[in-house]
Image 1 (cartoon, rainbow, N blue to C red):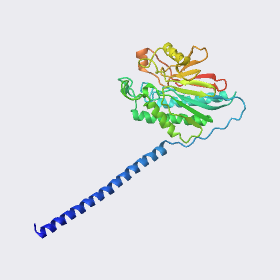
Image 2: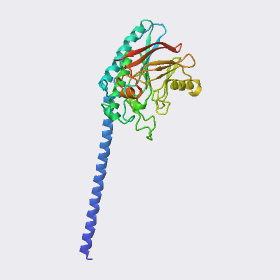
Image 3: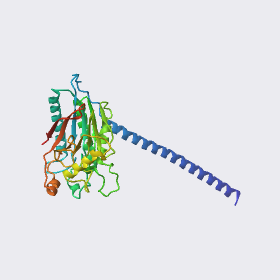
Image 4: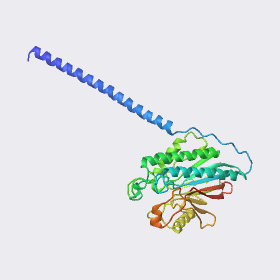
Length: 338
């Protein structure tokens, strides 16, 4: 090789090295810009969530300074079946009926306040707030919204209801239970039961109301929740906790609750609240003190219940008033919503 050829080869290697270095530099810059872009998008998404979902704190209602013993309102709201579609039920009807409950609960609370203060409220959400898509083969054809739309609309409705309660009562406690319709996948899917769309809706609404200082609300990883109002103690269950397919006769389920009360559940309680069956009922427990309160649904025209069980019910929810000192229910209302 001549000196000229050797010089040309070294020059080409130098230029190739320079080009490679330039390419690596440009790649680093591009990567940095991409990372900055990803970070910016993530920050924008987080900011958008805060702006879109986080609500301003609700103005506190006028304080009741009477010295009489105060009672506590208990709202049991369950089985909204958000996105269920029948000849008389859909998301619009759900919104209307749930807000109608709040209107009537407020009027009944004012009646109770004529006798004694009612400063606080506990809201027990009982599960099946969404309709879901995985409970029976025809279900996807009997809804008016996808899972995503169910999550968005039901989360917002839960937040609206809690916020309205904060406008009626000085303090609000939420106890949230999830149901079988929020299940992700079929019954044999390898998905933890607590990965439930109801629970996701609760968490979204809870974050929406993070600025509310008068609101107490814990997550619900377990499938049985505890209601504690002063000396009053009760369990909140959806109603599908026992039985091969989550549905048993009332006498069988009551026997299960009595076993829990006799010591199978490691927390003493007086009453039990459940939904699941879409009917309003009350059954005495074996100790002669407590009761199993079963609450209806906002839904109407449930074809599965009609055809499979020959059953039907009118839309309703439950409102109780609790004496926190004596630890018992003092008044109960079946709130019709049709």
